[in-house]
Length: 113
Image (cartoon, helix red, strand yellow):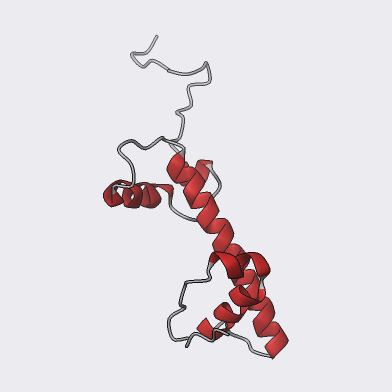
C-alpha cells in the first residue's frame, strides 16, 4: 500500500474548489460585493448569504435594465446602448421609474415634469 491517503471517497479524485460566484451561477462577484458591504459598515454582522443574495439582485436589475435599453435601441433604429437609452428604458418602466426616481444617469439631463 502506498503512503498516500485518499480523502473524501474511494475514487481518489481531489475535489475542486469553486468560488461562491460560480456556485451561485452568477456573473457579479460575490467576494467583491462582500468586501463592499464590509467596508461600508452597513451592519455590525454580516451573514454568509447576504453578499450572494445582493449580488443576485444586482445582476437581475442590471440584466433587466440592459434588456429594456436594448429594446429601446432597437425601436429607435440604433445599434448601441447609450446613457440616454438607459434613462428612457428606466423611466418608461413603471416599477423601475419609481425605484430610480431620484437617480440621475450620467450625461443625461433630467427631464422631469
